[in-house]
Image 1 (cartoon, rainbow, N blue to C red):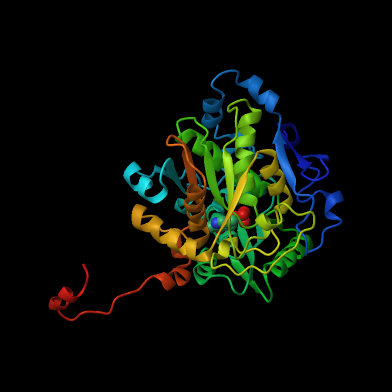
Image 2: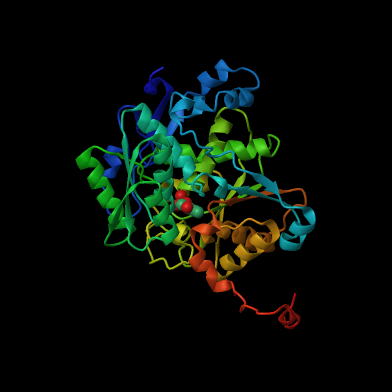
Length: 416
Ligand SMILES: *Cc1c(COP(=O)(O)O)cnc(C)c1O
């Protein structure tokens, strides 16, 4: 089966459809109007022949899809094109009732721990698919602009796949993430300027040198990679749709992936309703949420401590807004102090150490459960998108290392 028999692209703005081989990145018509001050138009969505898939597997459709690594709803032809690393299928934990009653009040709460991916962030889901697609379509070099996790993820996956990764980074990216890129053997190109400058340069470089580009909300396949979490959550909940999923949001690609995953399942008739998907941003980087109600997009400089969701112009704003409207999504902003507090509560109660951007979704669930009455039986999922070890600098503000002792008699003076 050729790619264009398997899937097609559709512009999320003008609705124009493209055969799989016809376009690679944005909708060529809509992208003409793009400027760097506004969220880009022309982000493509990937769709499949859902009716054909339903006819092919008339019974136990979900199990049939699982048996074949979900290839029917992925833009690649063989699971062997993916890296040998274990990407996705991450742990899913229910917070025990006694703890969750204390922390949140009523409701059941679950943690989807995506820090357990090979490079310790959710971004591996996207990198793995982009890398496999590159392999099947004859590219050996993949380039990306990144403030940290997307770059360290692409670097790691490419290391496993024997591909070359070139990462354009703003010089201010957190050190652990830069060290990861270098250790995985990627070519790291620090750029004078911010993420937008790195973004533009990476696109110019991929055009000039013929490299494949993984940039978020530019390459449509990142969302296709990120959607896999939805079928995992569905399966890990015993084939049930949760009531709510809390998702930390920067550019809006992860949350669009979560929507897309459930949307695919709806189109296949596997589920009948969508979960309520809740976008969480920091008050100090709320450019996506703040602009949802307005006609004209206005960006404010982001200053959050949660670097992975610190975004001035959310690249996937337009599609995220469409998804939130179509499927009655909700949203909430939290303060940086709340993020740090939530991060501590999460670690102390679960043994999971999340990076600030990931702890934001926990903070969002905390704030949301205070505002709304949750049904005791409601199932609430918190998406933990990255490991705390990626950014110990930020968290050191709320951690006090006690002075050293020279004799155990000094222990009596300490609260133990
Ligand atoms: C990238 C990232 C996010 C935000 O994802 P977007 O697609 O930019 O909205 C959240 N948490 C972590 C850890 C990330 O790396």
